[in-house]
Length: 379
Image (cartoon, rainbow, N blue to C red; front, top):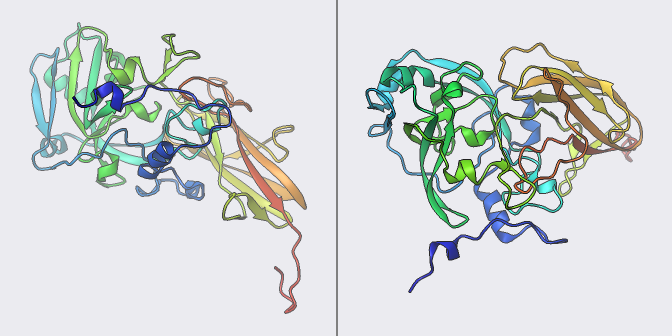
């Protein structure tokens, strides 16, 4: 007799004290990737630099044969091909998307999962059909309490074999805060395979787990959805046995575009003394960002940065601070505040899944005096 599914897939756990990153976590980090922080310079992230988290395998898909089935508690169930989706009036939203586990690897104790630092983010222009348009086409039953989105990626997680599925309440699914999109293009081109080709969901302002990739079914149901990714994963809990709170909107965060140049291994930064324009991006699931503060002493003192004018409500906002670097080692930090008044904390808020952590980033910078070589050049 072969192994059972529960023996193949281990339960969730926390790292033991002093336990390093495991081979399994490294394998996850190899099949996914984060945003190189120097790519914060782009208003719109090139697809190959945008963060990727694939729960299972990237499925094989065929655009010409793909069907998105919209059914369940609706008046007229219907299947839409990609060409039919393109016949509807298209809308494009610029959206900053962040993984709910961003920052997990910095927690103590560390949840065993994908070891994100702060790089699980990206911003893209997504084009498609508003979800409310498709639900209007099929006639959503007023008794529906959840809309379930099913992807084509299939796997096993903590002993549960499953298709990746998430749900939204009808008020979010058909509303404008945020405007939910069934997307078939990214940055003006058909979706790349790793980003959900040929069709995916985009839920602006919510962590990335809500934006289901390789979308093959939308199903209205009249009882609450209790699938694994909704009721077990993506919940903020302190202990394994509590129900916890669902992960939804992105907490405010700012990141620094790395100044100077890096050390190969540590990625510490090296700069010369003098004026340096420190730049970065800030975003929140409750936009707009109203303030970004900068610190060069590890968060002991703060000064207000300059915010660029907002141009897309669900996209990150550029900021900068003019810093005078002096010789020595400095810890640069930034923190954002959104319109609800919520500000990034300095310390990580621990939870068992490592979700929705938004502690202020810290960048170690070594400011070194310029030396003169034998040829008379500054080095």
